[in-house]
Image 1 (cartoon, helix red, strand yellow):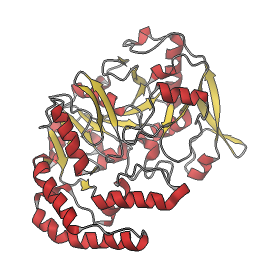
Image 2 (image 1 turned 180 degrees about the vertical axis):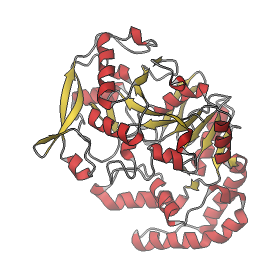
Image 3 (image 1 turned 90 degrees about the vertical axis):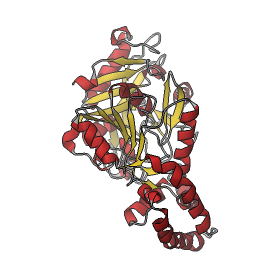
Length: 429
């Protein structure tokens, strides 16, 4: 039962979209298991350039079934726009399926998200304002609306007034905002239902059947392990679990189904929004990496914070997720830099530590301890064989491999599908 979890190993934006699009050629199913349209995955292939927010990144392969799991929160307006855009690009979306159990991001969730960020002012977390957190709050509070309820709009219409009245109490009394209209929301639901009904399925059984047949199933994570609600840099985290545990609960599959856990790392680090970041580069090098790498958010367009590779954080991520393999992306962005630094430890309150601190306040006080490696001449861009890499570039890859504690099996040297080095076939391990 070979399920392969593809997990962002840093703070998101590691290049998972490209990696999954590449791997999906050998998969029957690609299943998204967490997050919402606060995440953005970029895919560039023969079909064009796409920025996915909800649709899984295997959609460009006609033989692959693409699934949105129960762990995802879905904004129907965003999803319908993505579906329409894909159809206009000539792609077949008939293989898309959405879990009945996936929760819906409602209009009041988006409004509440923005109001809360504004209320916090300088203490804001830097959310995308897409309503993801409030949707997960309702899920845990057992007041959320699930995709399957769109198939029974009459029953949902009976439940809706109590939900909306409660939200209006919060909007008016806490935030001083205008209430939302029940009729407006009901109209939206009535518009969504017939368009999304063909895609709403019991996806857990689709995944189970594929695994039983021995087919490759890719579990697509969103964001990164260091943003995990439990294991990330709390409170500067997302509202779901991007780690391997989220893959289990977000799709309803057993641990024995795993054929491998794949960690996707950038050759450097980036982060969006607030939160501690020991290797951040607030200088010309950081600006160079940002501009060369086009490090701006797919979802928000915000500039990403850039920094050197953090092996302490990487080792922690590998421990939490149990990586069998590493995919290293964006190696080409470091072309021409000399020296190149890797964080190999932290100084915390005058003492060296080699383990990632588990309390966010401690990480704020950490100062990165660096090891310097020589840069390499020439370019790695577009190289497709590891033996063609500059020796010093391969030395950098091997050093990351040793520090993190898992083998680098794939190296990405450009944004397109074919700009990839396969060191070892992950599916054959």
